[in-house]
Image (cartoon, rainbow, N blue to C red):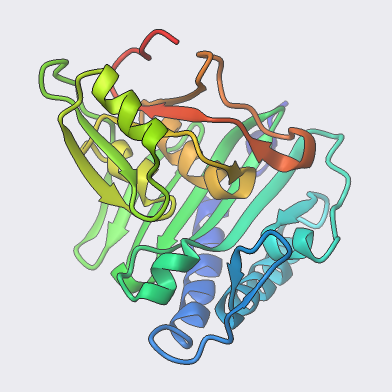
Length: 264
């Protein structure tokens, strides 16, 4: 039986949105000011905002679902990796898009995703500087919430002659450009962090190729929102992108909205 059968998605999402809001407020205390930036062993940046947001999320997830292990980016970097053999676990990126955060362009997010049996079944993506959240759960649907209220979202029906791709603002590479050219995609919009999944989920773009390195906590929440909105995320070989992989590392993948995946 699915975890969501015993934990009604509406009430669980409401609690998680409140957690994400608190974490977002924590990041904004450092936004545009001294963020205490330093670099981890892999040379990726981490700030006081990452750690403040993660502390809030970890505390609240342990209170809400003490039986579910939490894989969180900064905790993993510090060597704290709980056992996930049961197949049910949270994936947390307290501040996805640290480069966007530091540049001041607002395209950073707080991500909380729930994985069951290798699939993301629930996700909350909060964009603190944009005052917007995207969230979804299986059996509940996918939604956007902003200053104008809440609305249900879904991928759009793609026009093969007028496809729009979304690509990383800070991590676009030659392989991505070659893939876009090979598939005849002339229009591309740039976005940071997990916002790329959300842009497709709400019907503003059709496809997002990503061949550079990502971790599962980077993608789980956005993947959940997109898949529940009617899209899919597959590896470059065309297989569904799964979770619980060694070291939580993702291979290259392509996220699709309302169109069939291209041949590998």
